[in-house]
Length: 113
View 1 (cartoon, rainbow, N blue to C red):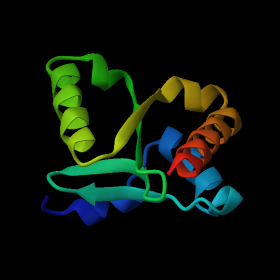
View 2: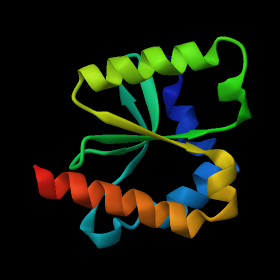
View 3: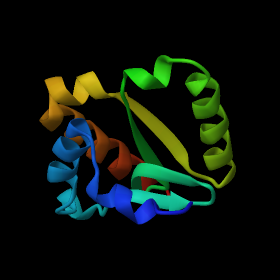
């Protein structure tokens, strides 16, 4: 994916809000932003939980984007990674609550391993 490094510094507002809450490894759970995997770039990734987090803006509902997201999620699942999709509007409305939910999901997946 040419130029993928530039994405690390071009986050959307919902991604910025979430990253501010996840970057300090809350509860000892480490997250990566704009993580590259195969032909894709994940908004956030927790390696310990094998969980990808995608923040979906309105564009994800347009054109062929739903089908592309479905194919992407299937490919990522084939790598043993679960994808959690969160509407951007939910992050804007309650970034703290969404961050805590993500942390809780990751913690539960880690404890199952």
